Length: 118
Length: 206
Image (cartoon, rainbow over all chains, first blue to last red; front, side, top):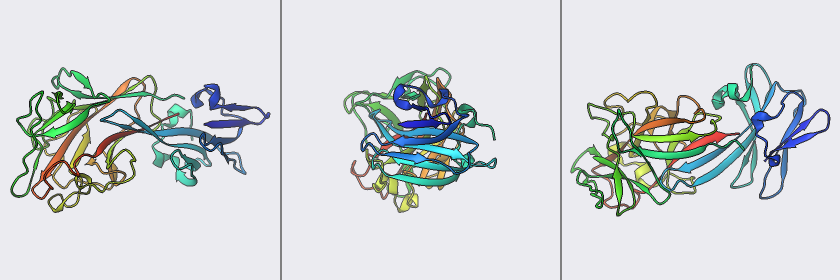
């Protein structure tokens, strides 16, 4: 579950049933991801304001059984116009969190969908 | 929150007029020999030397199944786009969907013979696939040893080593289609042991 924190002190979280794509992004100061199993909350907060934040999840669906297996949730921040980004990835199975430095173009992320222009 | 509803189908119609049969929750996809009927599965007979392609593709239970009628081996002169279909209802994906295979539902290892391969497949997965959204693949789109490291539009299916990555994200209420094939090498172990991996679609959403 993601939690977005805003400049005016307010927060919006996924538990409210809101889609990430529908929340205002302009004044986000930090985002968090909460591990529903352990209750632990992990924060992605950068010293300098990033160009954009994003969030998405990954699921595996078995072709045979149609069962779904949630893999991970990522919250990320794009730090420059070249697309470099910092990502916190929460592994749903293990509860482990890792910090990833990547370029958003390598993620094949649908930037248009996310309303991100670099 | 915006998770698409993902449904998987095989085509038991024609290339021009597909008839999509949903792969149900108790169903399996079977690569079979040429004498399979709707009630009896015909195991593929391995060749004495070299390798061959499995002749047919079916889905269903062990006792009742439906043929993927547009399935052809990669060396067939007439290839089809509408064989395996993954439909994304209501919501888009955040990244291009992927198709791959694993040992089992832990989705962590690819050690079974069918994925690890044999000498005849140059240690590549028996399973080969191609994204066909928009167009059928060219004849001989895969060989018995096809495998590209990472994601590609034509590839073997083996965990994160080799997988299909679609050319674009899936918009809401759209589909991705695939051709799929299975190599049967002469040095494969007889029987189903090591030959029952799980095929998976990886998709992302917000």
